[in-house]
Length: 425
Image 1 (cartoon, rainbow, N blue to C red):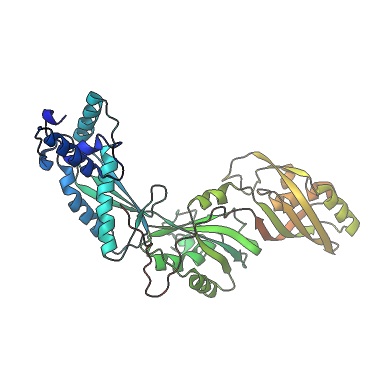
Image 2: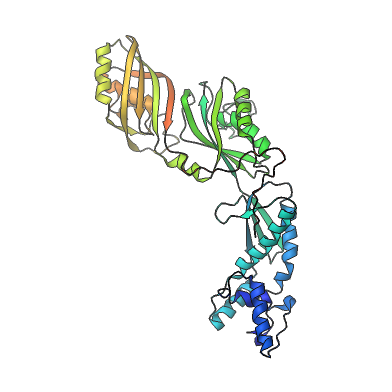
């Protein structure tokens, strides 16, 4: 191998990466070269003209310094290095492996490690130790060798909580104006929004300000109707903060600030840091829901009539075709959901208060009205009298949303480094 042309110690050692424990490839390559020299074969390393890496390992210091500059002002604990190699390096390495039937380490893997090792040392010297994370890094640094460019990706920060909503006039998330699609027009008073406030917009600003992120995305475990209250234990949600510059937050203080600024409208609780996988759980778990509905009947009924209808619905599987009121934005399908428990009492001959515990995805307004036969059975159908929900409250959203929550990051004591005391490489 050496007789056919120059190989630097990195590329020589990487070809035999399975030999020798606790050695870097450059040390392994140097050892092999030393043994050959002792046997009378003189092969002097020329790091600048290596026929595989083209001398790129001589630039490790340069790339590590560029990475250090790129992360200036960004708080992070974990990182990952990535390399986009030139076609010439890729083909030269492949040719060497095939000719000598080598099972060595890939070039990208070593280059990532060598630059990352020095990057970690430089940060540790500044009092900011970090650690490599191959699965869920907070930042990713990508080195494009061919273009001599380094790019930085700051991964999102995820904060879980539960919210209660106390007014019947705000949606869960931003609602762009249908006429102008968010651009601004006379109909929306040039705000670009149908509703001027939302749960998302009442919760997000303090979090975005403290993290110095670029934007937020709101993920809820389902959503209540705009005219429904969210009471009881609150609805689980995750705020995704894009490109946060700060990750150490006092969530207790921020929770208090949110609740004070949104008093009478929204209240949050249980704020905590989580992994991004919690968002998927929020979307996919079929959570049980508990609702309270005030119902009005077109004609007077008796308590016995009401209890007979509720008894027939208790434990019943309901077939619901997508409600008329939402079919314009959702697929027109027939779904089956079970009423797990239902109870209620008459308030007067034409009004009742009903509590329903059901599988997630059951439309309660249509369970009462029947939606012109699209939901069966329904209170209206079984009673033989038209009925409608006049007020709807969500009391509980039940589900194991926090499986394997993330214990970090967390607020630090005054004077304490927000970075873990480990050195990356």
